Length: 101
Image (cartoon, rainbow, N blue to C red; front, side, top):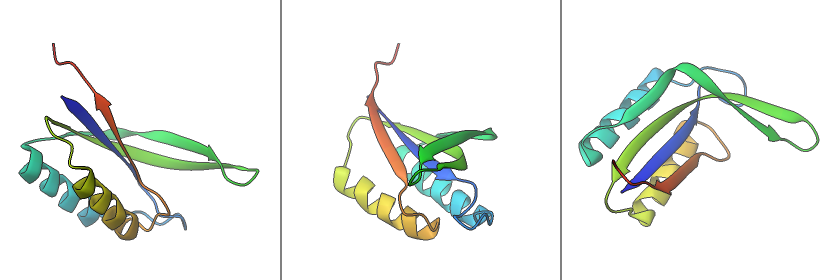
């Protein structure tokens, strides 16, 4: 199995909250395509990175799905759509091989 994680910022680069509908639409899409999802939304995670000499910070939520097949073309297109929808230069979508026990 492959675990796919999508890291989404709660606010845009200007500090404005992301539209709730953007999250709801993505959850609906993932449930329809993969049959379910896990959403880590209660306590936002903190994303930190070096932004040209100063530390940048985002509060993020993580959505996860598990799948037997990874369609890289579909995921790449989704990432590009999410970058526009969430007004971000880059959205992280990552995949991990997992063994279910």
